[in-house]
Amino acid sequence: MTQKPKVAFFDFSSCEGCQIELTNFGDADFLELLNHIDIVEFREAMSEKTDDIDIACIEGSFTRESEKDRLIAIRNRAKIVIAYGACAHTAGINALKNHTTDFKKAVYGQDADQPHLNSNDKALPISHVIKVDYFAPGCPMSKYEFLNIVSHLLHGKEPVIPTYPVCVECKRNETICRYDVGDHCMGQVAMAGCGAPCPSQGIPCEACRGFCEQANLTALENTLINKAGFSASRAKDKLRMFTNALLPDTSNP
Image (cartoon, rainbow, N blue to C red; front, side):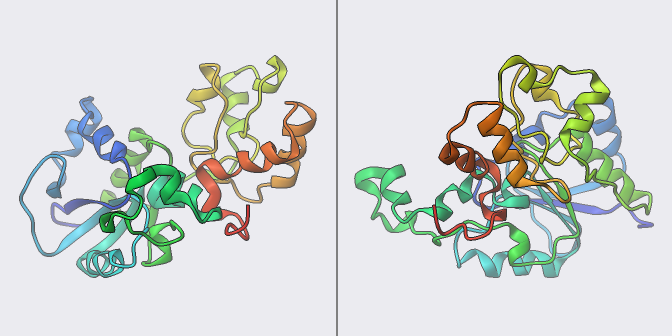
């Protein structure tokens, strides 16, 4: 990109926490990035809009058929699409509804039949509808990883997202394994790249960044049962929190 690229941010079904994470950027690296890009659309921070864009950053999962045309329109306007945050990347916790039929009643109670609450039976990653060029996973996404992705693109380089598990980062950080203190963790199947902040603070990894390459989910289930004392059903349910849309046969509990 030889000219100052136009960057736009869009949101679909999500808590918009990743957009808020962006507006919280105040460090020198982000302020320097603003000298090299033009943010032309960003609902959380501005009302202006434009037509053609170089980089479209999309937050949120695909949950309504009516969203398909909007996603396709964004894809047609943008040279590059980045799915940022767990909801756009894996459908996130929105996909918890994928294995049940009464999710609306469970969430909304007596208001479940309100027409504005209608959505598809399944929540899916936006890559189900459009081609996504790059992913910035996590809940919320790592602001430093996002900065690295955009910075690489500005320099004409391919962004690098780790494919190994979070356990590797815990080892590098000399973090005590959660299983060694009688806890549980999904780090053995979770995609690294976040720096493993949760285990370092005594919090189990929940695989909010999705699965690493060749993730052995059966081994994780066995570890949760044999080392953490989970029941078989609880071990299976643990896989659904952020990654339900990635599992086979998600329509069945």
